[in-house]
Amino acid sequence: MPTMSRAENRAEQTSAILARARAQLADVGPAALSVRQIARDVGMVSSAVYRYFPSRDELLTALIVEAYDELGDAVQAADAGVRRRDDLAKRFLAVCNAIRDWARANPHEYALLYGSPVPGYAAPDDTVSPAIRVSGAFLSLAQASEQAGDELGAPTHAVTTKERKALDGIRPALESPVSDERMVRWLMAWSTVFGHVSLELFGHMHRGILDYDAHFAQVNGQLVADLGLA
Figure 1 (cartoon, one colour):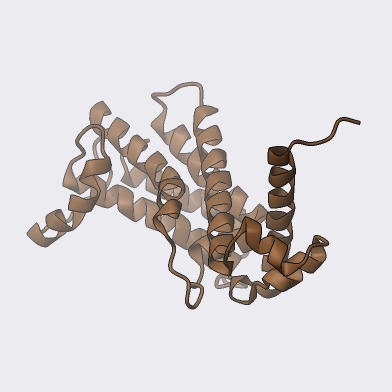
Figure 2 (cartoon, rainbow, N blue to C red):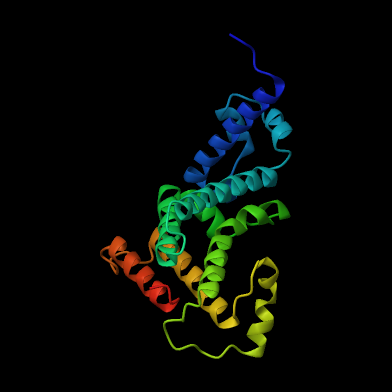
């Protein structure tokens, strides 16, 4: 059998460490992540693990980046799967369902990304690009809707001067302009989708909503109408 190169061996060991770390997320959560236990699980001494991830925070960062990339891949694949690119309603629904499907399949990774902050951990800039892949999908659809001239489907509250300034952080990410009124509505849709998924996954709708699938479809249908995509 051919021997692995040093790079291949490092990649394999890195993958094994991350796999055990993800398994530990399910058992104890990110705050109690133990490099020592991970090392035992993969048959290494803890000092060896630190050669791959010099600190617990760097290991957490790697887990966060990996999770964001997986979610981003799922969202982009769902969007790309809609053949009629001008069917913005179908593309929006595909993105929303991909977010929920990934979250339900990976609840502990979702909690790492969108749950309570890990005490003492501050996410570095390395997590920014992976994180904005999902919000970028919403922004792309907002721009397409603006270009298509879609009319917002509900009365629009006037955007205040303070809110216009608050949106200044988003505008540099846009390739084409989006009206402030439309941007507010799309931000509401983005927060509604993630809020619904979080409430479902974290058990806050238990016994209140008896059919999560039906309710999520209803909410998304309302968002399609509010965004003027129907």
